[in-house]
Amino acid sequence: MFDDRSPIYRQIAEQIKADVLRGVLRADEQVMSTNQYAAHHRINPATAAKAFQQLVDEGVVYKRRGIGMFVSVDAAEKLRAERRERFFADVVEPMVTEARMIGIPLAEIASHLEGLDDHRSQ
Image (cartoon, rainbow, N blue to C red; front, side):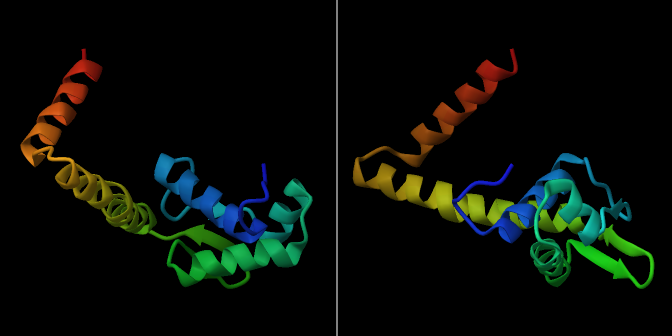
């Protein structure tokens, strides 16, 4: 499950975020405790705790004292908005810059994208 590309706690946080976006974890649903998560994945509980603290800090999960961690009501919406911003900054803006450099009009890109969408919906 884990790789060497980034710290394990970040990978845990990203996996939980992905589960929220895919609907595997829903609003107000309880998530595994840090100790359960650590035991299940055979990692240090402090590593799991760091991941969950990051998620709390980002507003993806919240703590109910004495009960556990739960998915925030607006977590999916918040994560989609962040991913959209990152998509435009990391993918679309560099693509537009490259297109302008090589003389591709934005209308041609839009037409190409619409063609891809039409092809996939058939």
